[in-house]
Every structure is written in structure tokens, then in C-alpha cells.
Length: 409
Image (cartoon, rainbow, N blue to C red; front, top):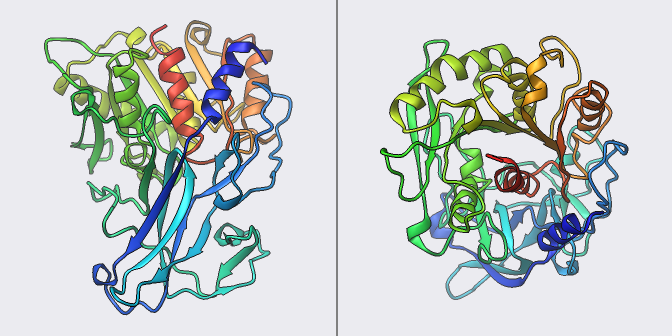
């Protein structure tokens, strides 16, 4: 691995440890609570990532570890952890403690739960929970965790609800997608209503950098969520606004306007999503905000199904956007997806995923076949792979690299 990539990976893996106490007051929850447990993505693994390659193409499923078995150099990885909480007999408040490395974690509380043997059915195995000793169990009766009543996720629009609370551990020096301490460098996130391609009322999320000035012209970045997601995901789960704040404050990327949208409502009909972007979202953004219309100052990126959306836009409109980022998704063929547009030679595409990502496979929507198709067609691309899986530990790091090392270069 080149020295600069090795240094970057070491930075990504070097994390401070923090003691975190979680509490749940029964008075904040409706109904009687007999027991409570903390549930969240608090799992870790030891990465085998060696570089940026298209040759593996298989998820390895390395062993995952609970927080108590975390060791320096391990990476966060998707998967649910379950830890019972103790009730204070005097106050009735439930609490538990974890020691965690710096980072952002989705979490919630499981109420009145009973555990049973883990599911062996592939359709329900995602519901299995790792417990403190590293073994797995399942809920006897499945019920979704509730978010933390004292740290509720933002649900700003009718289509944008968020199921998990977000725990931020550490500082931006530990992890760049954590909130900045200085209010002066914080941008704003608002949600703007618009009429979409079908005549329905929809919402887009808009990030404006700190000190936004209509007298200036800003580069423009469109960002798509993945399957089942919405326009709030990247801000609420991915900390995209915090990441932009920190990159801009550190002069690692230019101040830019970032726009998110909800593509799930179109059942991933890429042609519809494409026209909604070009006919409805883009004209409104350019009318309301001081953004560039120069393709060299415009970018589109997305995760998972949003990565496939990115590739559709890349293949159809390389003359409209200069920069594309496909995170955890690919497409090397199929209706509407071709590499025949000659303008593909002139734009910049970043493509990659996490090393244990479900997108790291040999299906046509996998990342390795798409990279090989690009290579065989002689089309330039930038590969980028990170530790983790198909999760919010992968995608902020993908965007960080996209914004810091690719955009506006």
C-alpha cells in the first residue's frame, strides 16, 4: 500500500476511548416498563483491507466483537449489540455504561424484551443481537427499538422520519463527522418544499456553509441516500453537515451548497429520478440559492441504491456534472446503463465501498464488476475502499475522501 494511503488508513483507525453512560427515565416513555436494554451498532472487527482493488469481490464476514473486546486498530462495523440496563431502585431510572472509541453510533432502547435463540433464517438473521459475551440471541417477539427520548432524532418532514438516535463520542479531531465545537464554523440545514416531477409535494434538504453569502457563487453537491432512505438520512445518520463544517473550517474542501432528496418515493425508477433532479430540483436550487451552473463546479454522489442512481446520472449526463461519487454500489450493464457516452472520458468518478460490504460482490450491481467494466472500456475512475460494511461507518468516510481529495481538483 502506498505510504500516503497507509497513513490515511492509520488515521482512520486511530481512536481515543471514552466512557459513555446511557440512561432511560420511564417517565419519558408511554406504558409500563418492566425492563430496558440498550440496542445499537456498537460492534467492531479487525480490518484486512490492503488497498483499492477490484479482485476480491466477496464479503469475508470476519469475526465481530462487542465493546468490551474492542482493541486499538479495530474498526466499527454494522450489526446490533444488546446490553441490559439496570434500574435504580430509588429513582426508577435505567442505566448502563460502555467504553467506546470515538465515532458516531446509531442507538435506541429495547423495552420489556425477552431473548431467545438466534434466528438461522437468512430473511430474519439481521434481527439477531450480539450480547456482551460475543454470543448472539434474538428477541422472542420482534419489536423495533425506541429512540432515546432525551436525544430524539430529527424528523423534519413527512417523508423523512429517522428511527435511531445518534450518539457522538469524541471530537472532530477524533472523527471528522462529529459536530464542530465552534459555533462560528457551523453551517445550517433546512428543508425546502417543492413540486416534483409527478406534481406531488416533496422535500429536499439543503446545507448552507457558515457565512453563506448570496454575493458569492458556491459549488453544488447533490447527495442521495440508499434504499428505504430519505432526504434526512445523510444529515441525521451520516453527520454530513458536521463533516462539511469541519472540512471547510480546516480548509480541506471549499464551502459548498449540499442538497439531498428523497428518491425512495419513486421506487428507484432511475429515469424518473433523473428527470425529477434536472427538471424540478436543480432549477429551484439555482433560483433560490447562489450556486454555480458550471458543470466543473457541480457534483452528484450517493450510497447503495443512491450509488446506482449516481452511475445512471454519470452515464446519461457527464456533460452536466464534472464529479461523481458511487459509494457501495455499481452497475456494469443493464437497461439504461451503458459506458458508450464519449464524455465519460472527461469527468471524474470515485467508486468504492467497504471491505465487508454487500456491494463488494460479483453481481452486476456490485462494485468489482463495475470497476472492471470501466477498466476494460478505458474509462478513468478513482477507486476507494474503507474498513467496515454496508453502513454509516463506511459512507461518511467515503464522502470525506470525495470532498477532500476529489472535488474541485
